Length: 304
Image (tube, rainbow, N blue to C red; front, side, top):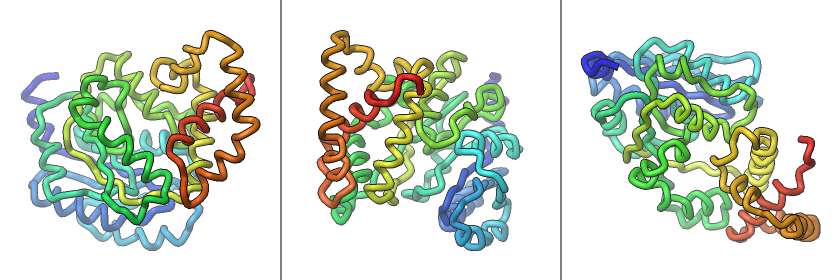
C-alpha cells in the first residue's frame, strides 16, 4: 500500500462494536467525544446481535442521537464472527476499529494513539484488567489478571499472529474484506485465533501496540465455566484448523503415550464434577481451571 494513501486514510475511522446483552451508550459517548476532538471523519456503528435481554434495546437507543453514531438491531442472532463481518460491510471509512461492547476506555488519548501509530494492515491494542480486590472470588477476573503480564505489547509482538485478540484491534477495510471472520463460528470462542492464523497465511502485517481497553465486567463463575465448556467444544470441532494456535491442542499433540491421555480422562471422569463445583463457587482455585479445561476437552466424543 502506498504510504501517501495510508497517511491520508488515517484521518478516516469507522468504529464498529458488536453488541449482545449490553448497554454501551457510555462507551459510545466516550469514543464519539474523542473522535470529535481529533477532528477526523468518523462513524460509530453498534450492531445488536438479537440480544435476548430485550430491555437493553431501548436503553441503547440514545446512541442514535449522538452525531455520526448508529445503533443497528439485527433480527436474527448470527454470532460474533458474522456480526463483525456485517459491521465491516456497513462501514464506509478506510480504517475499521473493532471493539467489544463490555469494555471501558481507560484514558482520553485512546483514539489518538491509534491514529498516530505508524502501521499498515492490522494493529492490535491489547487489554488491561481493572484492579479490584472485591473481585477476588471471580474466576474470570482471576484468570485474566494472572495472564495480564504475559500480554504486554512487546510480548504480543514477539508472537504477533498467535497473540491476536479481537477485543480491540484496527484493520484496513480492504484487508478486512479480503480476510473476514469465519462465520462457522456461531459463538464467541476461538474465531479470533483462526483469524490470526488467516492473517499469517495471507502475510498481512500485524503490529501490537500498548493501547489497551480495560476489562471491568466479568461474568459469574457458573456463566464463565459454561462459556469455557462451549469454547472447548468449538476448539474440538475446529481442532485440525487451529492446531499450532492453541496450548491445549499443542499439549494434546504432545501426549505420545496413550496411557497418559487415558489417565487424564479418568481423572476428569472421577473428579471433574468436583473441580467444576469449586470453579463455580465463591473460592475458585485457578490451578484447577487449566486441569478442568484439559480434562473436559479430552473427554469430548471423538466424532464431534
